[in-house]
Image (cartoon, rainbow, N blue to C red; front, side, top):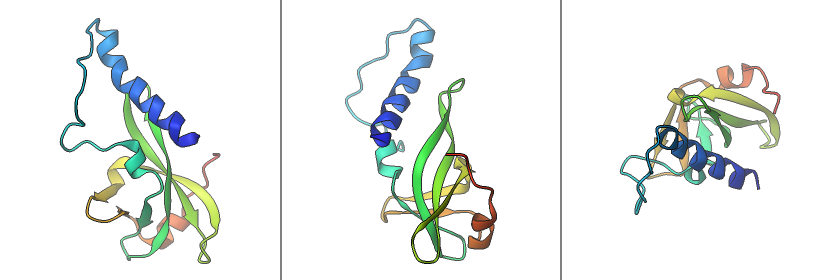
Length: 120
């Protein structure tokens, strides 16, 4: 359900700048090259720079003023694979691999685990 809300919000925010300018958005027939659906990012495994799986992408935080994703919520897992806490990291710190179902985070695992918990 949370995924549906995120996808709906992303779609609405993407259309908002065009509608605000009085323009009618053209009907899209395909996802533009280089763009990524939110659904493709949610639940991907997140790996640190020391190649440790630290958790999964849980959600996306959107700046409504700019209509862009600014932060990514990661469910940080304990060493046993159980949810430990949620943290938010800037989107720019992630590198996506289309070939693999993983996300590389530009942080060491200890740094990720030391981030403050997000009130989520």
